[in-house]
Image (cartoon, rainbow, N blue to C red; front, side):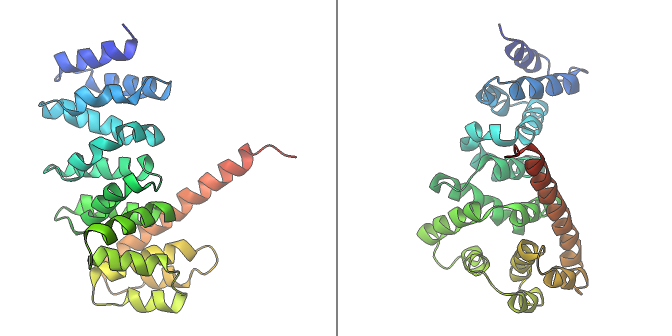
Length: 237
């Protein structure tokens, strides 16, 4: 029996084991070492809350390897437990690439911008800020097909139309909370060459928008770090 199988079996047998944290870390290492991420399914489907939370934590740590578990995400994005939604949003960001099949997942994650739980809303904002154009476009195509007139569909259409800085600043002051958040996402996308809209968000009267602007800064820094690593790893001619 593979070590990952033994770890999974142990977790299923002893969900309250003191060493659960170590088992989870060992499993993450096994998955990153090449063991199929689909082996996580029995833990995700467990009726034990402790096991399910451990599995969701692992799911959020799998990066692009979570793509093989993409079909599990709709269930957890609609889960009554906020922790499940947060981890599913994190997985949705890295497990989708913008294929047509990704549209419902990204759209469901964006819908959580309106969730009653603050932690869930914050994670959904992070996804909105960090998602790639293909990911957002897949959500828009899905919403256009099944939910004509959706507020998120209209906001995505505006975001992906390439609004200019003045339009962004105007929307950052809009009465609609959703319009302000999508304007912030637009501001994040042009911050490298025109930081003014993002600066405006930092000084907005809306406290939530100011807080989300700090998230946008973090996304900018994270993406810049990824670009630097890619440059360093690119062989010189």
